[in-house]
Image 1: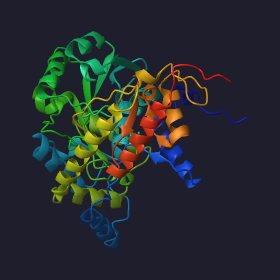
Image 2 (image 1 turned 90 degrees about the vertical axis):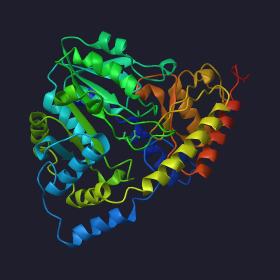
Image 3 (image 1 turned 60 degrees about the horizontal axis):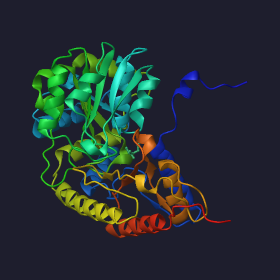
Image 4 (image 1 turned 120 degrees about the vertical axis):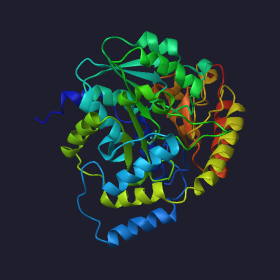
Length: 406
Ligand code: GLU
């Protein structure tokens, strides 16, 4: 009989994609659903980027490329790292993959041996621990609750490091909390890392450009250049250029690591789409001024959802520094009872209740390793967000302290 691999039993389906799929399915059935589950900007990909893709197709740019990226895209990435982060890379220190996700996967598959530990601050993006598990590593989760603004301290990092630690996965601004590490926050971590030369740093900078209120984005290799030869700096065009479907992620790091990642990619997916790569060149080299408008819109949406969510009974929402997520606590709803008599035991029950009663799709905190919370992606119009938050207020207001009499 056909049997799936043991490896598959180590992981679960991506909770973000599961929720996005469910919301789409319900909408297709004609249900009135607002999908705030997936992290995807609602803006269209800018026209000049699409033009570059059309031009690439017309020019016959439709064949295999170098496995880890075209020379043109690598050169655009090198210029981006220099311009935005003050980092210098050579072409052999740059890799392009099918989304940031594949870059992370390649890096872990190329480096992690059975039993190697990977430190992951929680809340974390849903795919980090599962990728580590697929690579036969051991995720070491460090709880970073709301009380410490969802950020890991130097002392926490120090305590988590063992002789088996291979990587720290660092993500700022964070998916799912939007928390951003200041230079000082980050220096605290890099000071610890300097003392432990066997630990490498995987910095996921995917939300670099989406920061608000004059927050100053910094990346580990910038804060501590002495660590640069053990840092992989990961980024991509998905969020900043609204190009999620184009699937282009990239990284800069030590040549030996980049070569290992290329081998993994060469034996799995080969090059990312040639057309998407041409579009990414245009994105990185083109006029970046549209981004200012997007950031303004995101900030205003953030302020709106934070305000409206804080008005919902039992919900407490912080104001994040970046990304397009909020990660409110729903502690005040746990233990309460829905109008249909179901007790809310945990954050998964809570998001199920929001979806079933009000048609609002978001992702439960347990999927990101910190409960009781839920993640809302506010990359939607203010109109839709207002509607969604009002529905959440209604749902929360309908919860009671006791099981309704039958
Ligand atoms: N990164 C986005 C999210 O967290 C897209 C889905 C995924 O890759 O998980 O929602």
